[in-house]
Length: 408
Image 1 (tube, rainbow, N blue to C red):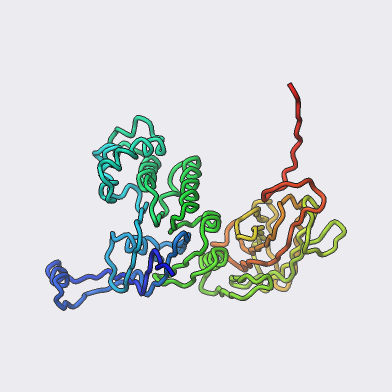
Image 2: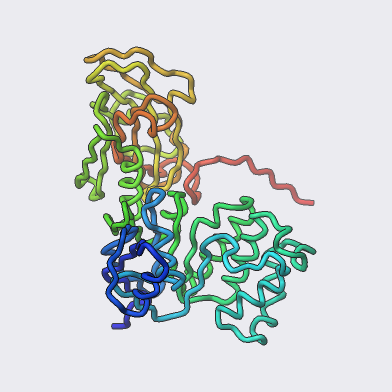
């Protein structure tokens, strides 16, 4: 059995205030010095990364994500615990980290790649490909201080991925820049994955985490609180974001075999949810293109000044397929009284590809669950789409074409 590419065991990082630089220096020399103040930003984190494995790291701001990556790459030194690396790491952390603003992009590439351990010959051989991938034209030979943040990200990504690493670490830097280059970056990341590169990626983009990753780690207040299936981790992450002092989070095993997360303050709850066909019969299996109605019954437990229902349809990997809410459709309910029941009927054609899908519901007061989260319910409903009557097609959407064929 081969050893893990990366082993993190009991890792912790504390920032300490010694009261003076002299006392700090004494601590570096191994002398016992009383610490004036100590703040732990990461503690007790343990996990392994295997060959070819892709792991997403999620958490709210200040949870310790960037600190964890800096410890793994060696730009920060841990206070406790160990890190074992058995392969070459390439990292894209803080945007343009290590770039000299007065040097050109080309000169910074030579400098950065040299620090990564590559020879002058290796760098010269890869320079044309780096320049072509970055696509910044004549700016490649201009000082970096003249670059936009998107241009800096292009150079940083191009040089970090010029040579395929054993582990690629990507922080939120990829959120900067245009969508065209983001697609280009993710294409290269997927190519690396197919070639055996392991991936550690920090992202708030649930779609990216769930499409790229085999596992996800959820950090909260510097602790690793969940390591598991990306869809389950993202559900818990969303529940934590919505949590308020009077909110609760319930995690249970769903009949589908997945883990269900329900959160909220409870002023309103979903009592029943069902999928109906055009004969008003409850169904779990639906034909491609079949007209259906999603019927949701909500009960108000307390007076609610403003009630919005949102729903999201996800595929089996937890990736979002379609969602909206009654704020966006301008159907907000005002002054809902305690004990009142409201029925929502959402009709649409099942223009999805074959597969298993789930519905998540949200009862809120605005267009987001970040203001008042009455109830957020993942896996509120699970259904299956089968192709029983349409021509064979592949993909997640049923978009029937009209094709004309002309011989010339």
